[in-house]
Length: 136
Image (cartoon, rainbow, N blue to C red):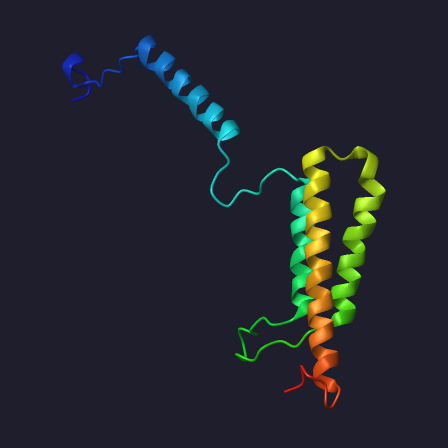
């Protein structure tokens, strides 16, 4: 039955369709390059490194709740000091290569972490001294 010309399938190749497909592919490629996909990691930055160090120092300062046990994690001042010193080292090693914004962020963050460390360390020593006004 396929011998009759009206029974054979006809394929129409439209050059406009090919051009439209090419344009759509180029547009999709452009969007993929310009807009990061959900879950895609951002470009590495100094701010990201500082943020990672701050998270570790904050965990060392304690006060976070363990998601498994529900218990508050006590401070580990040695860990907190290590990460604060690491941020100080990073600031000193990059000092002449930072722009003003990066320098201000690092110095401000370092100051805040040091103040938090002093506060946490002070609370621990005041509570351990019998008869101190801050002891409970």
